[in-house]
Image (cartoon, rainbow, N blue to C red; front, side):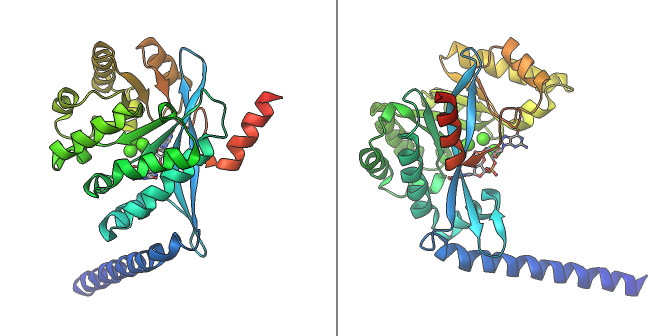
Length: 274
Ligand code: C2E
Ligand code: CA
Ligand code: CA
Ligand code: CA
């Protein structure tokens, strides 16, 4: 049993080591990924329920690693944040997304994710204005998705930036709603245009009455406060039917489509127009 124990420990140590090394490798490669043009922005549709059609797309970054293949942002965004690379990376995503969206039909919006660290770097609103100017995308077609964690730090400065962006006509969505700590106080401190209900609630809505109650309450609250709502992670017709019944504005998830490369979205629009 003792030998076994030691073996287990060694194995554990080994796998820890592997993890540390894999992470190092990602760190090193990530520093050059931008200049090597290895990043790519995918787009996932936001389906407007009452209009019965796609009203916009969320921009989701991907990394085409030369040997690892397609790397998920869940793996490299946290590292980019720690290394301070999220600011140039975020600026790059923003300009890509704006340039792409300007080629879409005029009623289609684009939603871009912002990391908390981007708010800490002074030039955020300036770089967003530059992206709009360079691309020619009207501010009204841009939506920013922020999480509660962005509001945790130096909230006065963050709120000032949000107000400035909103005054340009940019919409602000509160992402992953329900996963943070004190969501309701944030709703009081800033007039969000939209709430995105985290996919964990949507997933369990069908078989957990408490999750369903939360979704119903949040949708009601948002409506009272004049905010639109997006349900994330919608995968089944049943979920869609329930969300429709509960008055949700928009749905996003594999039921409609997964995130796809820009070229495929362009083809989709072209085919629709013909
Ligand atoms: P998020 O903002 O909550 O984005 C939604 C995630 O849910 C995406 O994962 C999307 O592919 C996934 N998803 C969509 N529909 C479904 C579904 O029906 N079922 C399931 N199981 N998942 C679904 P993705 O693309 O891997 O992105 C993960 C996270 O990485 C994002 O979560 C966001 O926090 C972050 N991220 C992605 N792109 C960017 C970016 O450009 N900047 C920043 N700061 N963060 C980004
Ligand atoms: Ca998001
Ligand atoms: Ca989300
Ligand atoms: Ca999420």
